[in-house]
Image 1 (cartoon, rainbow, N blue to C red):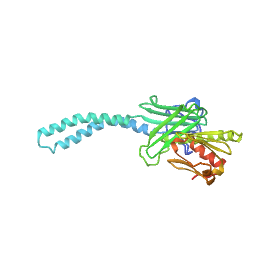
Image 2 (image 1 turned 30 degrees about the vertical axis):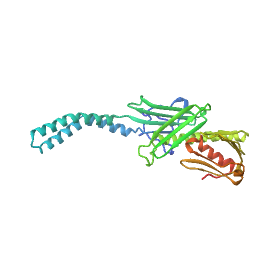
Image 3 (image 1 turned 180 degrees about the vertical axis):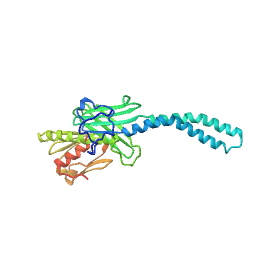
Image 4 (image 1 turned 120 degrees about the horizontal axis):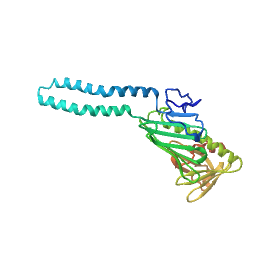
Length: 297
């Protein structure tokens, strides 16, 4: 039986209809989910049940018919015997392989709430978890993401730099639009929810005169106040204001801060780093635009 939650929708905002099965309950820790993705469709379940009834007798009969007509074209008795022997060996094997294929249960499910995200991957049955991850936003401080045409990864860390959530995967067909049922879409929704959560908290800190830090793996940290950006690089610390920065750029591969003439005169040659090495990248670009009045490209 599908598990129901009121007002549940896909990441694109469309309602989740009853053809899609939520085969695991949402963890109580994250509260009531508002967004979900699942690959398990009720119609697929019905189709697979029918195929499991058909395959055990349809495949042997098909093999027998094909073998019979093929043997009529062979004049040599030995060749006919070899053909029949091959059919007797291969028919059970093909039957088993196809039955395993139509019986295979392998699905993913994501729940997203205001408090966190939960991801499940099941094989064989809904009770057989091959992977499951749960994140409460309040326990994390940094999100690192990686994505290209073939693979993706979402990784959250806590204030002690400990890993608290990690999910990586591959796209079935690289370069093709990812369907909304794919777990990647649920994780992207979680990234957007986390970014909103982080930006709201960071804004409160900045408005009170505090600061917010962003980890740059291998290149130190960026510490932001409402008027100043400090890059604690491995060799040198750069203290910058909005006049020292010309612009920033962020594409699918790199994040870059370009210095103004004044910034260059202070010894700031710019910052360039791979996007997967920047913690809370989406939040960083949002806050740079908001507080430093610089535009990203």
